Figure (cartoon, protein in one colour):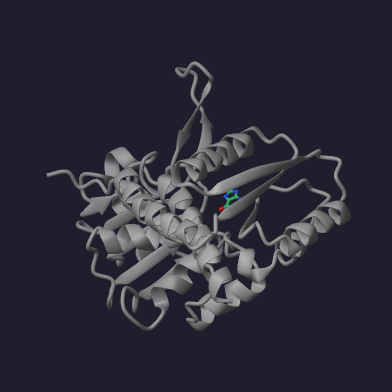
Length: 294
Ligand code: GUN
């Protein structure tokens, strides 16, 4: 039997649920609205935002993309965010990272109204996640990993988890989600990073490994306990002379050697990636639902 976790299939299940919520919202006179802001012409961001827009339309979510030139000042971007915060037709605002170097990402993300922060990057939502307050928005990628684990029937209560990477978008929120007291969590979480003395020893203890440090094929077979669940969040472009483009994408897991010993493993692509969009659109439906209650 395959030990692959089919992220596309699970994302589709979530999309179906979101589409039903969108239909229910429309019956109450609310069309969920999502604004994407893209600053500059980063090719990867163009592709990602394009995919998110397309899926929004499929689910009945209204979306627009505001494209700003790379020369936009931070003050101009903040003024746009202020206008969108005040505009009731938009329930979610997503500012695609990376931002140009002259902008301070933390300042920009902190300007988005917490109730429209479908990325879960605002300090209030970060704090709510840490406090175990389920009112807030959870960042889409770790939220998606959590759903993958739950919907694949992985036992979380009491599990030893090692998260590789301590970034604000994945590693830190991932650890926070899994360490909470309660159902579908209650894990013992270790976060390893570039300052960790012996990463492999920590990893070999883990029942669940979440690789999110952005190092191509870092997690090797000899770092994985047989039967462990392995989740690959990495998206790394590496040189490959045999490819038409001269590059190819690989994850943070050395998939070919890890798959035979893993209990379950995400393919890459087709694992975590589709879940990120699914969680974004589920968060958008929730933002719209909360606008009715608020
Ligand atoms: N760039 C890469 N991942 C993300 C994400 O989850 N949200 C936003 N806004 N930008 C990103």
